[in-house]
Amino acid sequence: MNKVLSKKVLAPNVKEMDVYVPRIARVAKPGQFVIVMPDEKGERIPLTLVDWNSFEGWIRLVFLEIGVTTYKLGLKEVGESLYYIVGPLGNPTYVGKFGTVIIVGGGVGIPAAYPIARAFKEVGNYVISIIGARTSKLLIYEDRIREVSNEVHVTTDDGSKGFKGFTSDMLANLLESGLKPDLIWMVGPAPMMKSCSAIAKKYGVKAVASLNPIMVCGMGMCGACRVTVAGRTRFACFEGPEFDADKVDWDELIKRLNMYRKEEQEALNRFRDALASIAMQR
Picture 1 (tube, rainbow, N blue to C red):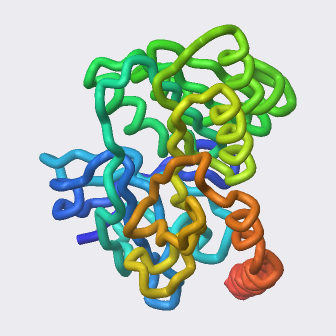
Picture 2: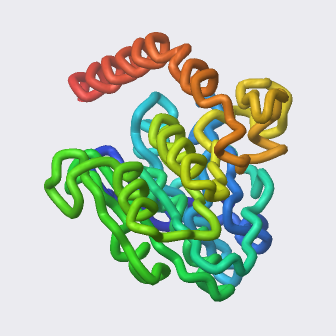
């Protein structure tokens, strides 16, 4: 169980991994996530389900190596097992026939948007996907997003591919041109979602944001996923991860995400030093 079936490098420090977990694969739905521990000393991290196969029993995860635990996960090789994985957790995305749906995915949020776009298209919506990254070298899952979208707009901060600018700029351009979508669904960096939320509100379009980056325990016990929505404290892990974007207190959320950046970087530096020391001894 929990065996790594395949591993692929998608971009610098971005990896895709298929894991054999039949109990999760049988019941997984778009928008849900799992909690993973690579080893018994690692922390618990949430990873959104990117794909799954209920017959073959695997789930697909995409992650950015940004902290100690994601680096440990990236070191796992095919045939090895993850220490712990639980799920699916969180409420599935409500997938209805709305009409025109815009899906916005930024960075490593693009793979998380893939099953959502697929689900909305399967029930008959016209799906317009906006995907973006800092540069073309970091743009991932473009081909797969195109497979499940009626239109795709690519943005890069540096203009190395597609539209030069942010996903929020492209969203604003589309709405300014007269497009009237029935729903906007977004996932990615919190500042991106904050900007897209403000644009959606300006044009009176309902928007839903997936707040998957802020969770730890996945069960509402640790309180790390607290977020203020419509003036109330909510728990993203079991009440979400999706909420009405215009009701989220984005400034509070972004501040909390940055609270332990220094400690996280120090831990990563120590981990890298330890790996370098082991390598030198061999």
